[in-house]
Image 1: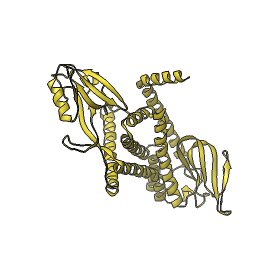
Image 2: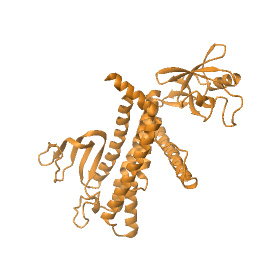
Image 3: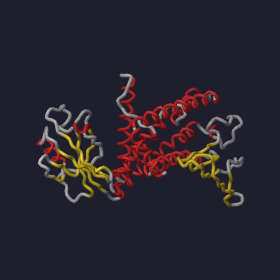
Image 4: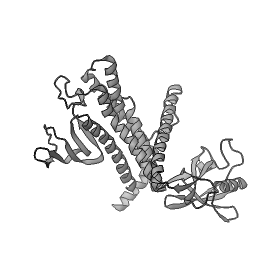
Length: 394
């Protein structure tokens, strides 16, 4: 339940930030925002500022206002928020629309309004990373560095069909000690030390003491003598990490630099997925749906606040990139229609555009359901444990 709470808070915050970007840009270009909601309907209540009387007025239920004022609403479903911009969905006919309608604004202004949500997600990621660098984020450090804060020897990758995979080791696991065949226990201090021990005891059973979250486990395994050239005896990639913090000015600079680096990495991975699908008809990449993201949130939360900050930034960047894709129903799809309208030099049929976006929306929902069902089967053991805990409480 704690993991679900973190997931709802993180995802809800970034959706809210995204919609706030649309809202602020719309207000800047004097486009009416009919409603700016925290959470999704049904509405609990709303507030409207009456400029004539200079006071806030309460709006109950789902009552709509025909006045110029914006309804600021609190809604029952706490997953982010929404902004209802006048004319954005093509409900206003350009000939009859008022000057405060989205359809009456220049194409470049409409593009900025649509892109502002994406821009806010990028800025939110940079802000979170800047805060993280100021408070302290995990970074790879050398074995010889001293006076490190929360130094750890961690597994960052596990080779398929390796002893480590058979031992059920996971990326993010911290190796704290190694128990040798003679039952002596060696405390782990550096990656080179671990590598040497593994090589020295090939084909012999050793025990790795692993810290995973707040729990400590013991995993038995035998390092192999014969292994692929790109793998080691155990099949793990190690790094030494420590929490490193920086002054505020440097933190902001590093936060934006890290945001751009993460964006490039995600775009590169996305490009590889598209390439694999086109060339091979399939991809090795593992796409996560809502359930998969919840599990990733759980892993990040178990590793600590610093890792949760990094994960939140990655999630915000992913939301930005997905939204800017030129696919119907997404911000990028709407921008694409505006670009086509600019090239054609006359508006596209509003009815046709609405049908295209609606079709895109149904495709996205179907894709999300498919990935969700797949995640359910993938993590069915986790659901079984959760169900057992629920039945115990009942």
